[in-house]
View 1 (cartoon, rainbow, N blue to C red):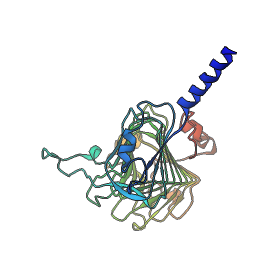
View 2: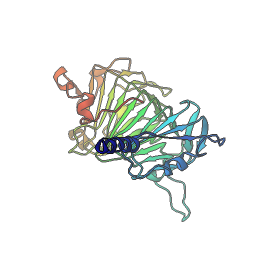
View 3: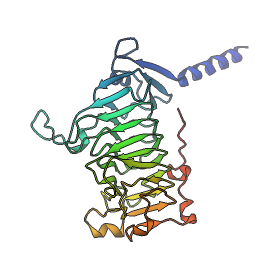
Length: 317
């Protein structure tokens, strides 16, 4: 009998330890905290269980950092259009010592902790068209975003992490120049990529030569208010950039050439840019640069969610 009691207590403790924790953020004081950063600070370090932070409607102007010790956090907004996390730093803004911030220090939201996810949140940099200004900087592994909006101009999303796997599903992403950039392995599925006036390039991947997958756009819609034939699908920030678009609808903002070598012909020998069964007025396969690729059916088989994300299976929120 004693043994059964101890087993019962053990299972209860395990369930309590692994139970999902919930926190509410509301600016009017009706939740646990008034700011998102306060809620994140309240999460236990290196938690193995999920912490759900529900954010009520509001414009939260704060610079938020999910530290490397803050793991397995899920951020859920009350309404994607009315739950806005924003800040207005930009690369040329001077810090307290009189030095420019630089690109990496401009993000409104930083993700260092592993296992982060978000749904129904708008991440914004509100500095305007003033050069590099990040809405979000993601370095942590297994970061997933569902039905989120990413608003900015140049350098909206920095997928920084080497070896970081990231997943964006049903998201809206806008910008002007290099507004999706970095070294992470990232799958964008069923996203709306919006090319704004004044820009020229969607992606600027810096994939390592030892990394099999860089950016993969799957069943995405590419459009915008930029002039016709004004945008390239990508240019290589580093020589071994890897970017592939599959089953995407390309609007008339995409140029016939499709890709750019960043004014360096040597990049044409190392970067890997490819397309497969895209559609729309911007899909002009016969006009694409000669060093890009149109995948065969066999070549396209390696672009599955399981292979791209190396076994990680993001769960819908």
